[in-house]
Amino acid sequence: MLELKQKSSFSLHKKGTHEFIKLEVKAEEFQNLVSGLMGLIPEHYVDPISVARTLELLGKHAAAEKLKIKIPEAKKIRSGDIGEIAATDYIEDETPYTVPIRKLRWRDHRNMAMRGDDVIGVLFSPQDNTIKFLKTEAKGNKALSTNVLEKARAELDLDDGLPAPHALSFISERLNAMGEYELADRIEKAQLVDGIQSNQVEHLLFTFTQSDPNSLQKAAFDGYGGNIKQNSVGVKVNNHQELIASVYQGVLDGLND
Image (cartoon, rainbow, N blue to C red; front, side, top):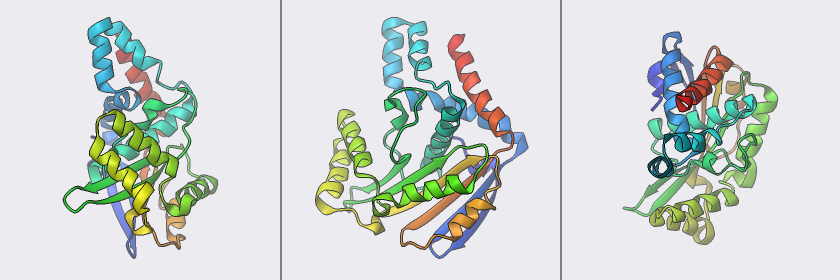
């Protein structure tokens, strides 16, 4: 866990049921954040069980190569991936939702961005058989811009603000393959039989940048006029590009040892 709230100065702004949170990573926590991200990266690209099996059957070098060929080389893709990885960790650490699928494991090519909803959080209660979804756009740019935020807003508003049908199908299929039948069945029932209503959905715009979220991101948050609960979280990290480079180089150095 990155424990972003513990590593950052924190501020909260509310507008009705909507929440805007700014987290600014403390300078003394920079290296701890690098180490935390290094620990999270491998599982987002390759299933740990698969790595363990390769290690047992083919040895350490083969297991290391298995992960290395999944790690992106392009700086832009790395930055975007860190945004999704940090968003996933934040969701599971700071919200009641879980993220059942690490979707970067199924990327077509390591230097290509994945399409569709960045992250989908799920809140399923078997006791009362209810399900909710957290539709997430994660941005890992060095600097935020109006264009980036407008694109994020447009993505969140697609499909009437609901999770994309193909994204939910992807999740349920992966869950079935993993043997997680109860959750897979409940997602399919919500999507294909019951229909998902807007009160079953929340949005999260998560940014991980060097920009001050209190500027453009807060303005975008204040401008929302829809009826789906909004969560906007801006994580400000000084030396953003240094952090990205340090994280990936640290992982690769460890694999080369």
